[in-house]
Length: 73
Image 1 (cartoon, rainbow, N blue to C red):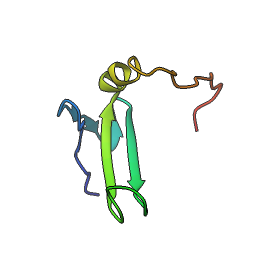
Image 2: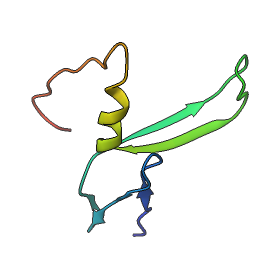
Image 3: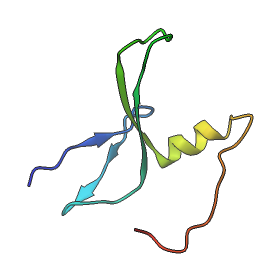
Image 4: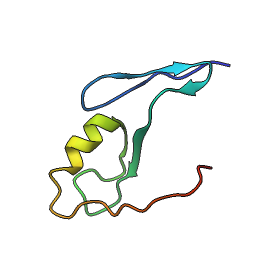
């Protein structure tokens, strides 16, 4: 089974995979832009490592809503 390398679009750090298991979490964003945007009919795909995510959201005026999960699926 071939693995796909993942790199953070913010810092360029490679997301490490060992034996089919990634050794850290990341945020993946896929956005299909529609009409009335400057990006009509484009698909944007990006990966953000946890460190860059923390830096990014620390600057938000309204922070993300966080809830605790009791199990991981």
